[in-house]
Image (tube, rainbow, N blue to C red; front, side, top):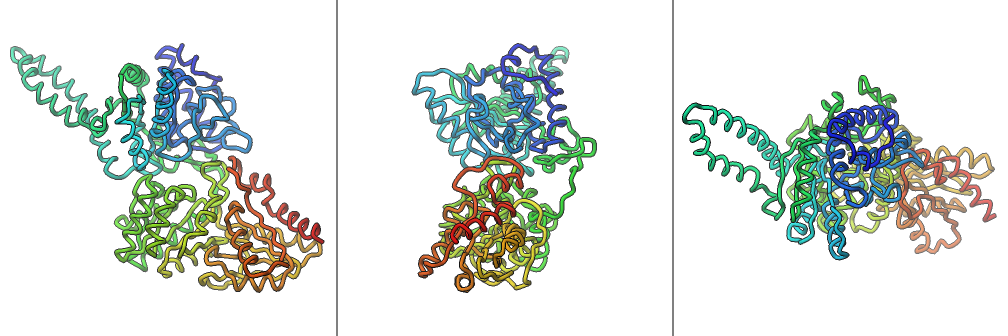
Length: 619
């Protein structure tokens, strides 16, 4: 166990001590994360950079803003939280992202990408207006520079009088390998590092030549300087108004410390380009950084997960995409830097020309897909639920308004567990429910996901298929085929019928025996569709049962239950009693998926108790 460290400890360490500390930190991260799981590869890659930041700056007076907040583990270790790492991402434990309520050293909560430059610009502007004199540092990396918001921040900050130090952690990766024009540009800048080293060697050798060495060296100096300007000083960042330093070795504490100290003295905003290696110091992660970007508990020696899980919804989606694409050449896939996370790795291998990874740019991904659809292709956008929130306007205006047949495969919907409040997809049914012409489906298991994918591709309309993180095990079913707006009746009941959507069908099915043991006649309907709602099936259910219960892995405000409630109200079924179960309007903390369901009484036992209590209380 590494001892508890604070920034003052780092300030008082020598370079030799800091170098030794980097080895201790990596060993600690491996030991700790192998037990708890978490974001490993990116944190192994940012050890020296974080140490240097805390050597040079005085946190929390100086503000360090972490973009793609999962790269903050080392920062947490250096700000007094080492002893809490055994609780990382667990219910009641420390978060895997910066949290203001966790430490004064975390100046802003960040869990999504591309926000740090805008945040830092705002903090710096406030500093200047108030007459303060602290430093503001934005640490951006892991592909976050592929997101459009980062450029909005750069554009604004480059013309601002407020000074911000931007540290670009360039590890050539987001979650998967980075792509696009910026990635190519940064590659050229990395090459300039090799150029600078070569320049030193050439000068040394020319100068050593008897008689002519010094003259030759001086004579080609203007050529070298022009080349350096073309490659480095004239870089993109310089043209925007930033002083550019780099590329610098992101694993050399002494070099990083010198550059950061110099940046403090410059009277304008600075970009420091630090080249790092994702997974540094752990061969398994170096060889496969995508796999170790985020991982559950694992064996350190082999890198193998300690628990072998059944196929997940992401796995099922990826396998089905390959099968569908073999049958239909018009199918193409779009990912926003989540090729592996969304299960598209096999699709990429099978159809490298039919997959487009646009980087961390969800707005662009959606409109790009609309463009593909307008030209006769069948685009499938694979994206996490909370990441798609960024593209609300594009879904509305570029897809739904123009009736483009884009299929959204929305992964990580509902309670996602340990990633916490920035990643729980508990709002999507609500923000999609009012979009005209959008079909919204949620499968109860992997088999139904496959059926919905086939159906969505043939539908020819804007369509969302929403599914959770985790195993895609089978649920009870009637075997009925998917049809627009048609639910699946699994059991009838006279006292109560539960209308469950998506993964909550399994929970409702598990709750039925306990409800029936209390003497109630209980039925279950797999809703399948949020939009269009199966009004005919719902009317039949209202005619059979005294009470209707809705259950969803989504907030109850504006979600599936709200749609059912509106139908009941507008159709004059005032005698029908309705209980809506789901998440309350809140930001959900991190913790194990099942623990969170239990805590908020959405597990099968609690659901049964709540339904029986509702019926009995009314009786």
